[in-house]
Image (cartoon, rainbow, N blue to C red):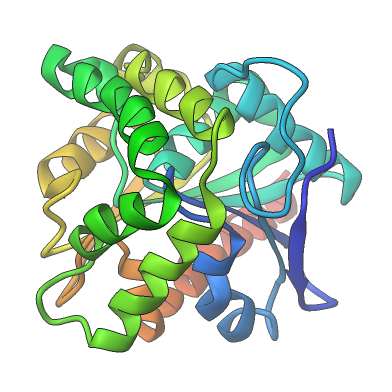
Amino acid sequence: MSVHLETAGEQGPLLLCLHGIGSSSAAFAPQLAGLSAHVRVVAWDAPGYGRSADPDGPLDLDGFADAAAEVVRAHGGSAHVLGVSWGGVIALRLATRHPDLVDSLIVADSSAGSGTDEAKAAAMRARTAELAEAGPRAFAERRGPRLVSDLAPAALVERVVDTMAGAIRLPGYGYAAEAMAGADLRPELSAVTAPALVVCGDRDTVTGVEASQVLAGGLHKTAYVIVKDAGHLANQEQPERFNAWVLSHLHIVTNSRTLRARKG
């Protein structure tokens, strides 16, 4: 399966970036630019999205996680994994299916999946028919503006809509929606061994602060951060603040491992 990647940075640990259900690697432009002096940043177009090929058959959550695992393996060793929204759900499943590949997690504006609530699951599944009927551009114009706060500049709203319109198509979006609708990761959060940073914009009305708190409470090794003046796409709406928290997390994880190695 051919997966398109955007990369930046030539030294430091690997940071794999997994986008939300209506997005692509373009969502991580602020991280590719702002973090590449410190880490090797790799952002994917998920299978069936953007410039990646359509998968040969339906992918469930495990399938998307396994595809992410192949990206990590192709870049050698292991990675810190940053997932936004649906990408965070993939990252969490990646951490339980392939713990040896995940050095740490940054889970941003995410949730335990839409399967935690019947109404949310039904609404997620209904998106496939909505996309088929409306087409990518109209679908993006309807949904994209909800992803940022009312403080977001018009240029960012336009960029989010354009990214979505250029990224989503069937059947890939339908596979992702079904994977999200069937996901309830609450029982497996305690099995995640990687240290995690859970991040949420204070104005996120899509998954919201409460859903991020569920993740933070269920994970053992967790720091929890609220990003002020940001909606569901905190990494794009407040990139400087977001990137600073990511670098702080990576610094803490790296230092902790160095200290343990010395004591060992």
